[in-house]
Length: 421
Image 1 (cartoon, one colour):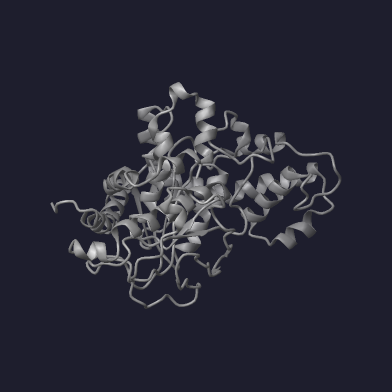
Image 2 (cartoon, one colour):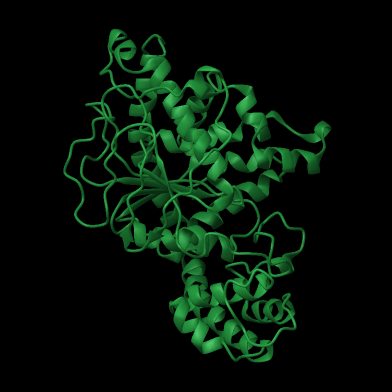
């Protein structure tokens, strides 16, 4: 998600899962995540969990089975699997955020119970401007809605408006081995760039907050990009660790339901668009943190800016255009973007563009991008001009999310031995 964020789906048995021996030693598995299955909307492929028997559903009929991993008084739906995801309000939402996450939400909300939020708590782990944070938070929420997130199907809210996120993070931090966090690749990269003197503890512990974002809502599946797989595995390990340490009969002795406290979520990765690359370097992910605005197409870029960026983007001098040539990363990236914004199949694009040169293809891609983004930009302006409407959406979304999150948080407090409020 630029550290983008989250979602889920699966059933967990009521017995406490077997705790991996590596966790007893306080070490996270070196292999991390097995290669996840891909999602081919609207059909979803089953994902096999490695720690306990779970039945993951396809996109056919929603499961009617009662959710045994949620408490009996929890408002969690027993009918539809749940997906939670979000995007940071830092910088402008760009094409990578949209094609890699938000566009897929529109399909998922028709089948799953979905909660989409703006992860503003994650946005403060590096230096930021307070005024810009609040403005960007509203703008990001408006972009969600402009892209097609339907409030009659999904809850849209701001992360900091549901205080259970920060509370659960603290509880999980107490049981997270520091060695696990030190292994996080993104922490190593970002701290190296910022320098030890300028790195806050939040940069080290934000994967625990990400885990809280997911586990609070008993998430079944989490839409993640390739760069988030390590964080996803940390979330799964934390869920198993808490279930082992505090769940099962231990929780029952504390007056609780017993069984698993958290569902162990599965990763959900789309077949294309999960990793849109930079316009200036086909080997680097399109990112808000790139100092060059020429490296990305922002969703709100006007037509002339889009045209200029595509005209100047990095290409190669080889004849024709083709997918999947490792020596032509920029070619593969631009063809993939064209495929996604036009809705054509990979085969159709390959046939259409095989004999083209860049002088012919770039205007074609530019027009496709402008045509795809124009209705989003128009709708965005409408939403931003009606602040009362946006406030109502965020208030209602936070209220619905808090009902679910508080039920989970209360269970964790109880299982960990805290005195009831």
